[in-house]
Each structure stands twice: as C-alpha cells, then as structure tokens.
Image (cartoon, rainbow, N blue to C red; front, side, top):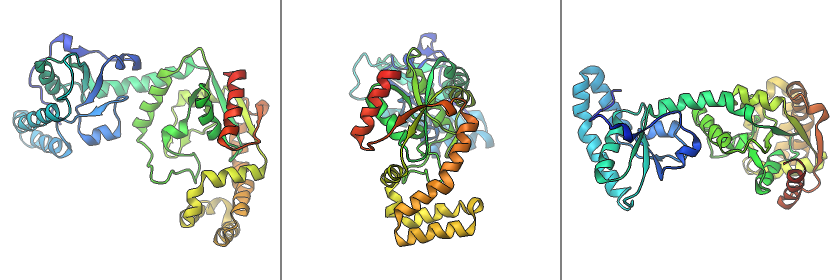
Length: 362
C-alpha cells in the first residue's frame, strides 16, 4: 500500500539502520506504527504495537491507492491516522514525562511512522524514527544471523529422548550460564509429539528476530549452551550458519536409564495422559515408518492405560534409533561427548547438575 508522507522529517529525528540491540535499549520505548497483523508476524525486540492504521483501515487505503490514486489514498487515510494518533496520545502516552524518548518505526520508515513522530515531537517528546523501518531491520537480522554464530563457542547438550536436555538448559539459566534454548524460542519440543498445547509456533520471521535478540545479548567470552537440534524445530528452520556452528561444537551427553527417562517423559508430556485422543492422532503419523502391527500395539497400550509400556516401546522402537542416527551423522563430537549422568529428575537434581557443569565448563 502507499505510505502517507505528511511532511519531511528533520535529519535529527532519524535513527539509521543497521541498529544494534543495545542501541535499541537506549530508547524508553520502541513503538511499532504498523497494523496489528504486521506486528503479530514479527516486530523489533520489546516493541509496543501502536498502529496508526488498523488492518481494515490499511486494506481500505491500499485499495483506494490501487483503484484511484496516491492522492485519494492519502486523503482517505489522513483522518484515520489523525484519529488513531490522537487516541494513542490520550490513552497510551498521557502519563509520559517530558523527557520520554521513543523510537518509532513502520514498514519502510515512511508515512505511518513519520506521522506519529511528527505529532509526538510537536508535543515536546524527543521521538525518533527508524530509517528504513522494519524492512531495513529485517534485512539486518538476516545478514547478522549469517555472522553472529561464529562469534560464540557453543556447548551442545545431547542425549537420548527423555534424558532431560530441556530441563538441564532451564537449570543452566538458573545457574547463570548462557543458554540458547531453541525449543523455547520455537514453542516446540522438536519431535512429532512436540507441539505445545494451546501455544502455536511463531512465524519464521519472529523466530529469527528472537534468535537475533538472544545472540546479541550474549558475551562472546563465555560459552553458550544449546541443545542438539536438527535443522528444523517443528515447522521452523534454524539458520544455516547457526546449525553448522553447533554441529562443529563440543558435545555433552546426558545419560539416564530407561525407567528414569519414562518417568521424565510422563511428567513432560502429561497433556497426552489427559487427552489420549490427541496422542493417538500423533501416533498415526508414524504409520508409514513403523507399519500397522506396531502402531496397533501402541494403540493397544494406549487404550489399556499402559503408559510405561507405551513410552518405553516408543523409546526403543522409534526415538532412540532415529536420534542415534541423526546425532552421529550431524554432530562431529557426538561419539566422544562428555558424559553427564542423570540420577535425579527433580528440579533440584537438575539444578545441582547444572551448577556442576557451569562451574567446570561455563
């Protein structure tokens, strides 16, 4: 759609891109002037949605632009923008102090952000506009994700399904280690059963922005712990430079016996115990790999409530062979990984292990 350039900004009202994460932190707020759907797909770190046109208004202005002219589009959009900006100042910014300093952006750093910046500056606030807008920031994220992984030494946490890789990463965060938890960022546990109930995965762009944010915060002088993920976490792709850096890094292997792993998985996947039909649907997806006889056996365990038998057989027949093949093929240090024995799957147990690992290798 056409932007709405009401006036030309003074040079001192612009902030150039590329911009670092730490530069963004120098502003009191980061305001996203785009529509709510644009914001939902992705936005700058810690940005606040302050649309000067909502989705319906933006679509209307775009239609007028295509069917009539740029002038008609501006004339149609101007009163909408004015009303929305006025409402934001009355409802969102009324309590902001005189020295409030926000950064404002839209799609290209044009009319939508320019309109909001103009009014904020007229009030007396030191509002700045991000030159190039979200589009320029997005280009920066893609470029930075090709370079940032090379700055860090990664420690890769591997181990069979149910050995507690995610729990160890959580505990390492508590132990003040640097952790890149890709499954948390992707809202997925990384397997056919890995969907989180009631929590959809973010867009690919949103995933990459959160990766950029996490990597930008890390200290290159300290190692970063990460799980031995594959190229995709659910439907999301891990950037190539990151996955290659991980695959060449040192590995730490969690070791736990099968009863311990079954107990851990029953805790972590308790939602399937509450909703066996959802698990049944997922098991059907494995039919092409395992055939009718094994699937029927799993369904029989499920219908009888034999959870330990079901989980144990899934580990032995599906997860362990697939994980071993993938790990040894993709992670060069997997064969000689440093072993970490898991004896206690409680929070306290993993925190004790994490503190030991952080002291020795963090």
